[in-house]
Amino acid sequence: MSMSNSSSNGYDRVNLKMVMHMSFYWGKDAIILFSGWPEQWLGMYVLALFFVFVLALAVEVLSVSPKIRTSTNPIAGATMQAAIYGLKMTLAYMVMLSVMSFNVGVFIVAVIGHAFGFFLVKSRALAAANKAAAASSAAASVAAKV
Picture 1: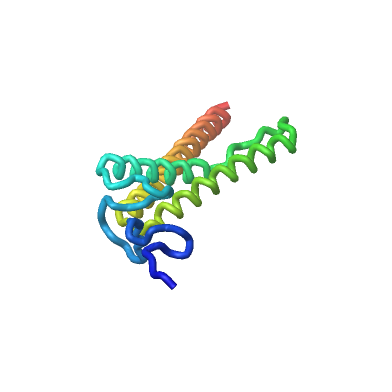
Picture 2: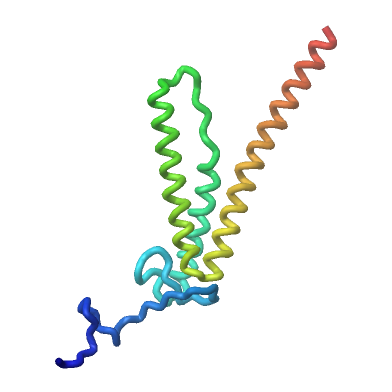
């Protein structure tokens, strides 16, 4: 029986460079979502961080269901909401898989993306609520004068 450097699945053990971290680490040498991405270039690592930020932001923005008009066909409205929900869950799982690289930079960017997306969604909702409250108080003051 001969001893060789190759494993039972045919890959050469000497040429394998992939390292799976099981605890948080800091550095640009990470594998995020796809094998070989972002490699070891700082620019690609920054692009990967930006991509994770946008994914996390999109998850929060998509968490607000669009209002369905009463004149909309129920099947069409439900289909649209299901499609948006499916997209949101796809993006959420991509963020989760990115964070599972255990890279501290990816983790921080994902948290900041979720927080900034939440801020955008809630600030828009608060602005709409304040506008509606101002309009109703103006209408009430006009009615009181009459």
